[in-house]
Length: 79
Image 1 (tube, rainbow, N blue to C red):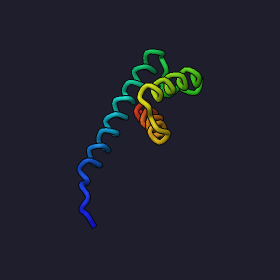
Image 2: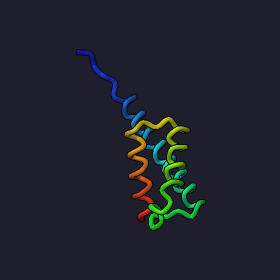
Image 3: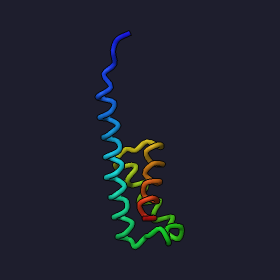
């Protein structure tokens, strides 16, 4: 069995974490620009959805990344 070089997997995983972290920050900035907070998030579902779809398309996020992005945004907004 050939040895596997896991270093590239770790780097690619780190890039995904860094990418999602940066996109999360961008998403939060966009929400704040529109005065959307955790407390009025449900009242602004349409605007949040449009912003989210724009980011998903711009960064070619997978469904798993999109779900993680949503969770990260909600977590950061709740702090």
